[in-house]
Image (cartoon, rainbow, N blue to C red; front, side, top):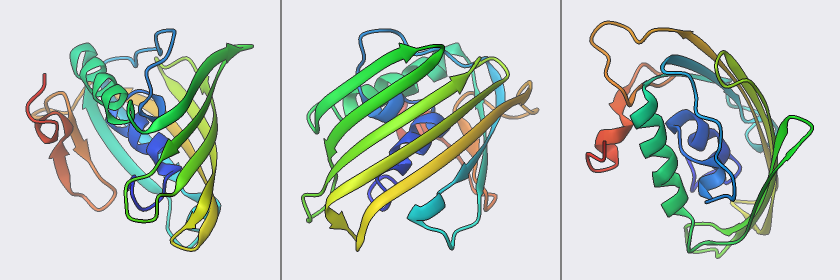
Length: 178
């Protein structure tokens, strides 16, 4: 997802519990409440023909932190700008990062996040790409997430259920970092 639609890095970050846009920031990003989270991701103008993607993720404090830390490491070397600030209770993130792939595309992203991270959060992210990536000069994503309760029986922290029903454990994908 991150190599196809750069602004979706924010979606992946939240869906996976990673840090915002994979960047290390000066203040701690709010931890999400442990349990089962449902995230609706609308890729908007980036891929208007795609339906809203709904995923569920089981997490605890340790898995949320581990996935944020993984995100911090993902873009340390790729981002020339990684700014995060709190403005009036909203978290504002501005990044400039080289994207993976042969095009050497640079994504400039502005994201605004709000919510209490205990029951809900909302993200709006817009990116511009130079040179355009896969024919797109811009992209956007909106994420609405809500805590739906404790993880389901048989689920373990890091388990994620994708819109298509595919199940995976993000911590296992990270190489067993727990």
